[in-house]
Image 1 (cartoon, rainbow, N blue to C red):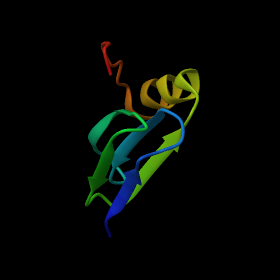
Image 2: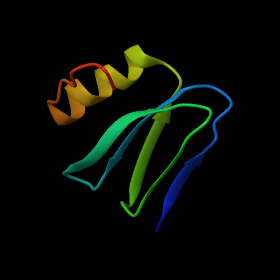
Image 3: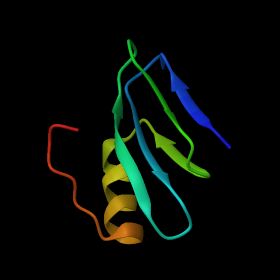
Image 4: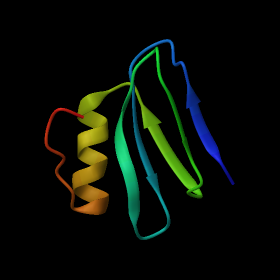
Length: 66
């Protein structure tokens, strides 16, 4: 299944993953499009929630800029 974030109205943080592995994460701005073939896509407008999910569920700490 393909997932897409297309020209969001606000900057949107995402994590594209399977049940066990992250394949991509980052930030999509209103002038951007992002799509993925990964089965799961988490999105949020809140950077702190996004960072917490990356750390707690995937033991990953991203380095800015996202």
